[in-house]
Length: 103
Image (cartoon, rainbow, N blue to C red; front, side):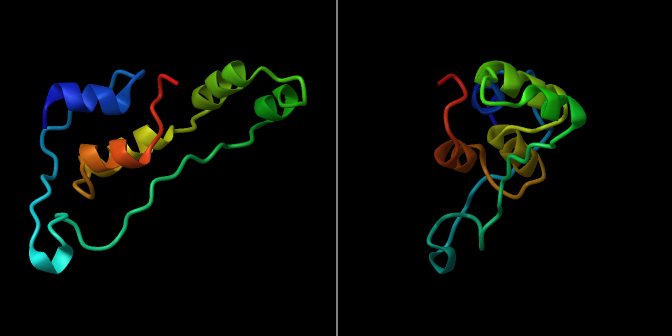
């Protein structure tokens, strides 16, 4: 895996490149995708006491996101990066199905 692709996936966080990652090599049975089946990635917000106090109809969304990440929430891309590091999917696939973190 290339450092640039990994950095794109984990932006804006600095996450160390895994020692190895899966490379999608397919066959006709799996339509040349390299993987059989589906693997979910999730962005789950833990609703902690500090988030409960912060969240109301006047909450600033960027600040709320910063607080949720501080409280332990993983973005969709970081959740996907964990699956890449575990060999369950590829960087290309995670980038395809997740929104750009710069927008």
